[in-house]
Image (cartoon, rainbow, N blue to C red):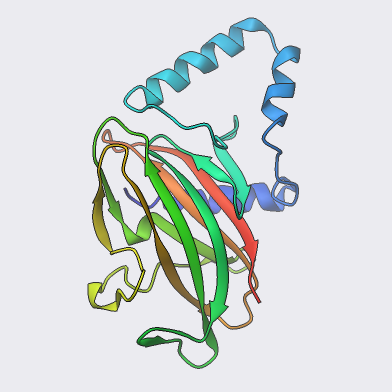
Length: 209
Protein backbone atom coordinates (compact mmCIF):
# COMPACT_ATOMS: atom_id res chain seq x y z
CA UNK A 1 0.00 0.00 0.00
CA UNK A 2 1.07 3.60 -0.53
CA UNK A 3 -0.05 6.92 0.83
CA UNK A 4 -2.37 9.03 -1.34
CA UNK A 5 -1.06 12.44 -0.35
CA UNK A 6 -3.68 14.21 -2.46
CA UNK A 7 -6.45 12.60 -0.39
CA UNK A 8 -5.70 14.98 2.45
CA UNK A 9 -6.21 18.00 0.21
CA UNK A 10 -9.37 16.53 -1.32
CA UNK A 11 -10.81 15.68 2.08
CA UNK A 12 -9.95 19.16 3.34
CA UNK A 13 -11.73 20.67 0.33
CA UNK A 14 -14.85 18.65 1.15
CA UNK A 15 -14.61 19.74 4.77
CA UNK A 16 -14.34 23.43 3.89
CA UNK A 17 -17.23 23.06 1.46
CA UNK A 18 -19.40 21.83 4.33
CA UNK A 19 -19.49 18.17 3.31
CA UNK A 20 -17.13 17.04 6.04
CA UNK A 21 -19.24 18.38 8.86
CA UNK A 22 -22.11 16.08 7.93
CA UNK A 23 -20.91 12.54 7.35
CA UNK A 24 -23.08 10.65 4.84
CA UNK A 25 -25.02 7.78 6.37
CA UNK A 26 -24.46 4.37 4.86
CA UNK A 27 -28.03 4.29 3.59
CA UNK A 28 -27.91 7.57 1.66
CA UNK A 29 -26.42 6.18 -1.58
CA UNK A 30 -29.16 3.51 -1.67
CA UNK A 31 -31.88 6.12 -1.19
CA UNK A 32 -30.52 8.19 -4.08
CA UNK A 33 -30.54 5.31 -6.58
CA UNK A 34 -34.31 5.29 -7.37
CA UNK A 35 -34.09 8.94 -8.47
CA UNK A 36 -31.31 8.20 -10.94
CA UNK A 37 -31.81 6.74 -14.40
CA UNK A 38 -30.85 3.15 -15.01
CA UNK A 39 -27.95 4.03 -17.34
CA UNK A 40 -25.76 5.76 -14.72
CA UNK A 41 -26.47 2.91 -12.30
CA UNK A 42 -25.25 0.40 -14.89
CA UNK A 43 -22.12 2.47 -15.55
CA UNK A 44 -21.34 2.65 -11.84
CA UNK A 45 -21.68 -1.12 -11.49
CA UNK A 46 -19.29 -1.71 -14.39
CA UNK A 47 -16.75 0.72 -12.96
CA UNK A 48 -16.90 -0.88 -9.52
CA UNK A 49 -16.48 -4.35 -10.99
CA UNK A 50 -13.43 -3.26 -12.95
CA UNK A 51 -11.84 -1.71 -9.88
CA UNK A 52 -12.44 -4.57 -7.44
CA UNK A 53 -12.62 -7.60 -9.72
CA UNK A 54 -9.60 -9.14 -7.98
CA UNK A 55 -11.26 -9.05 -4.56
CA UNK A 56 -14.35 -10.51 -2.92
CA UNK A 57 -15.37 -7.38 -1.04
CA UNK A 58 -16.96 -7.17 2.37
CA UNK A 59 -20.35 -6.24 3.75
CA UNK A 60 -19.22 -3.15 5.63
CA UNK A 61 -19.30 0.56 4.77
CA UNK A 62 -18.08 1.22 1.23
CA UNK A 63 -17.08 4.44 -0.49
CA UNK A 64 -19.79 6.68 -1.90
CA UNK A 65 -19.81 8.33 -5.34
CA UNK A 66 -17.28 10.92 -4.17
CA UNK A 67 -14.74 8.17 -3.42
CA UNK A 68 -14.94 8.48 0.36
CA UNK A 69 -16.28 6.23 3.11
CA UNK A 70 -16.96 7.59 6.59
CA UNK A 71 -17.30 5.61 9.79
CA UNK A 72 -16.92 5.65 13.54
CA UNK A 73 -15.53 3.35 16.21
CA UNK A 74 -17.11 -0.09 15.83
CA UNK A 75 -18.03 0.34 12.14
CA UNK A 76 -16.74 -2.22 9.64
CA UNK A 77 -15.10 -0.52 6.65
CA UNK A 78 -14.86 -2.56 3.41
CA UNK A 79 -12.25 -1.48 0.87
CA UNK A 80 -10.93 -3.31 -2.20
CA UNK A 81 -8.46 -5.40 -0.18
CA UNK A 82 -9.81 -6.02 3.31
CA UNK A 83 -12.35 -5.17 5.96
CA UNK A 84 -11.13 -3.18 8.94
CA UNK A 85 -12.75 -2.07 12.17
CA UNK A 86 -11.47 0.41 14.73
CA UNK A 87 -12.52 -1.31 17.95
CA UNK A 88 -11.39 1.38 20.36
CA UNK A 89 -9.14 4.42 20.71
CA UNK A 90 -7.62 6.01 23.78
CA UNK A 91 -4.86 8.42 24.74
CA UNK A 92 -1.92 7.83 27.06
CA UNK A 93 1.43 9.37 27.92
CA UNK A 94 3.29 6.12 27.32
CA UNK A 95 2.93 2.61 25.97
CA UNK A 96 5.35 -0.12 27.09
CA UNK A 97 8.86 1.32 26.54
CA UNK A 98 7.78 4.38 24.54
CA UNK A 99 6.90 7.73 26.14
CA UNK A 100 5.54 10.70 24.27
CA UNK A 101 7.65 13.85 24.11
CA UNK A 102 6.77 16.79 26.35
CA UNK A 103 3.65 18.49 25.04
CA UNK A 104 2.56 15.37 23.15
CA UNK A 105 0.47 12.31 23.89
CA UNK A 106 -0.05 8.89 22.35
CA UNK A 107 -3.22 7.83 20.55
CA UNK A 108 -3.59 4.05 20.85
CA UNK A 109 -5.93 2.49 18.30
CA UNK A 110 -7.16 -1.10 18.56
CA UNK A 111 -7.89 -2.34 15.03
CA UNK A 112 -9.01 -5.60 13.39
CA UNK A 113 -8.16 -6.28 9.72
CA UNK A 114 -9.60 -9.16 7.65
CA UNK A 115 -8.21 -9.92 4.18
CA UNK A 116 -11.03 -10.24 1.59
CA UNK A 117 -8.68 -10.14 -1.42
CA UNK A 118 -7.88 -13.10 -3.69
CA UNK A 119 -4.23 -13.04 -2.69
CA UNK A 120 -1.89 -12.06 0.10
CA UNK A 121 -1.78 -8.34 0.80
CA UNK A 122 1.49 -6.60 1.79
CA UNK A 123 0.87 -4.27 4.72
CA UNK A 124 2.81 -1.36 6.16
CA UNK A 125 2.38 0.71 9.31
CA UNK A 126 1.87 3.84 7.22
CA UNK A 127 -1.19 2.31 5.50
CA UNK A 128 -3.23 3.74 8.37
CA UNK A 129 -2.40 7.30 9.36
CA UNK A 130 -4.22 9.89 11.45
CA UNK A 131 -5.09 13.53 10.84
CA UNK A 132 -5.18 15.49 14.09
CA UNK A 133 -5.65 19.01 12.69
CA UNK A 134 -7.59 19.61 9.46
CA UNK A 135 -7.27 23.38 9.84
CA UNK A 136 -3.48 23.59 9.75
CA UNK A 137 -1.60 24.35 6.54
CA UNK A 138 -0.54 21.79 5.49
CA UNK A 139 -2.99 19.37 7.11
CA UNK A 140 -1.33 17.89 10.20
CA UNK A 141 -1.08 14.09 10.23
CA UNK A 142 0.97 11.35 11.93
CA UNK A 143 2.12 7.86 11.00
CA UNK A 144 2.41 5.09 13.61
CA UNK A 145 5.49 5.51 15.81
CA UNK A 146 7.04 2.32 14.36
CA UNK A 147 6.56 3.36 10.74
CA UNK A 148 10.28 3.89 10.03
CA UNK A 149 11.79 2.06 12.98
CA UNK A 150 10.79 -1.55 13.63
CA UNK A 151 12.50 -1.44 17.03
CA UNK A 152 9.65 0.81 18.22
CA UNK A 153 7.19 -2.07 17.91
CA UNK A 154 6.09 -3.01 21.43
CA UNK A 155 3.55 -5.35 22.99
CA UNK A 156 0.46 -5.84 20.83
CA UNK A 157 1.41 -3.27 18.16
CA UNK A 158 1.09 -4.35 14.54
CA UNK A 159 4.51 -4.67 12.81
CA UNK A 160 5.72 -1.90 10.53
CA UNK A 161 5.75 -4.45 7.67
CA UNK A 162 3.84 -7.73 7.35
CA UNK A 163 1.79 -9.80 4.90
CA UNK A 164 -1.92 -10.52 5.34
CA UNK A 165 -2.66 -14.01 3.98
CA UNK A 166 -5.84 -14.94 2.12
CA UNK A 167 -8.81 -14.78 4.51
CA UNK A 168 -6.45 -14.00 7.40
CA UNK A 169 -7.63 -11.75 10.22
CA UNK A 170 -5.31 -9.88 12.53
CA UNK A 171 -5.95 -7.74 15.57
CA UNK A 172 -3.45 -5.34 17.05
CA UNK A 173 -2.60 -1.80 18.05
CA UNK A 174 -1.55 1.24 16.07
CA UNK A 175 0.19 3.88 18.18
CA UNK A 176 0.50 7.51 17.10
CA UNK A 177 2.14 10.52 18.72
CA UNK A 178 0.20 13.78 18.42
CA UNK A 179 0.08 17.14 20.23
CA UNK A 180 -1.47 16.88 23.69
CA UNK A 181 -4.24 19.31 22.73
CA UNK A 182 -5.49 17.08 19.89
CA UNK A 183 -8.88 15.54 20.60
CA UNK A 184 -10.76 14.99 17.34
CA UNK A 185 -8.89 12.40 15.28
CA UNK A 186 -9.45 10.95 11.80
CA UNK A 187 -7.86 7.61 10.90
CA UNK A 188 -7.48 7.16 7.14
CA UNK A 189 -6.70 4.40 4.64
CA UNK A 190 -6.12 5.05 0.92
CA UNK A 191 -6.55 2.31 -1.69
CA UNK A 192 -3.55 1.85 -4.02
CA UNK A 193 -3.51 -0.57 -6.94
CA UNK A 194 -0.81 -2.42 -8.90
CA UNK A 195 -1.27 -0.06 -11.85
CA UNK A 196 -0.09 2.75 -9.52
CA UNK A 197 -3.52 4.36 -9.39
CA UNK A 198 -5.23 5.48 -6.21
CA UNK A 199 -8.74 4.37 -5.37
CA UNK A 200 -11.10 5.32 -2.56
CA UNK A 201 -10.31 6.80 0.84
CA UNK A 202 -11.72 5.37 4.08
CA UNK A 203 -12.06 7.58 7.17
CA UNK A 204 -12.90 6.71 10.76
CA UNK A 205 -13.57 9.65 13.10
CA UNK A 206 -13.29 9.57 16.89
CA UNK A 207 -12.46 11.75 19.90
CA UNK A 208 -9.80 11.05 22.50
CA UNK A 209 -9.24 13.06 25.68
